[in-house]
Amino acid sequence: MAVTLYDASVGRFLQTLGAVEGYLEKGLDHCQDNNIALDEIVETRLYPDMLPFRFQVIQVASHSLSAIKGVQKGEYMPGPAATDLDYQALQDLVAEARSGLKQIEATTINNLSDSEIKTPWWTFTAEGFLMSFSLPSFYFHVTTAYDILRFKGVPVGKLDYLGEINFLDKASKKS
Image 1: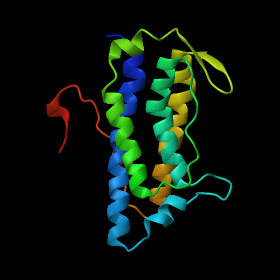
Image 2: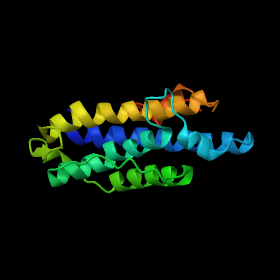
Image 3: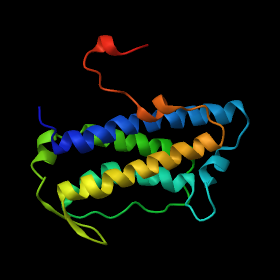
Image 4: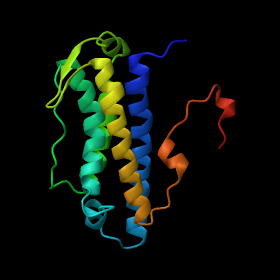
């Protein structure tokens, strides 16, 4: 079975956005249980010259749903560096990205594989954009957001990062 552009992009975005929803929920629970202000998490940086948690989550949405919409339009603009989104708004943003991606038909993306997409920096084919720019950027920001939560003591592990794994059969899945 060949892997399609939809499978390699939207399929991976959906899996990982589900994981992000899960670890954001664990982050919320951890903060509530330990009297940690959610604003503290939203403003946390791993290093002074890195952008905060808020930016990382915004970019997760930007490099998933916004990237797919960009492929459809032929133009991609990165997500804004909004400074007014709180933790709940970030959770909502991830949920909206996941919901929006579920509405995308596989044939729509697969038929756009060789189409042109312009960004503020470069011009790509849709496949080149998704595979060499958006997916790596997406995973960078997913990992950085995860690492910030881990740094703040949220009890997340590798399975929280991976999300729902596609097993050969349901019997392979351990409870």
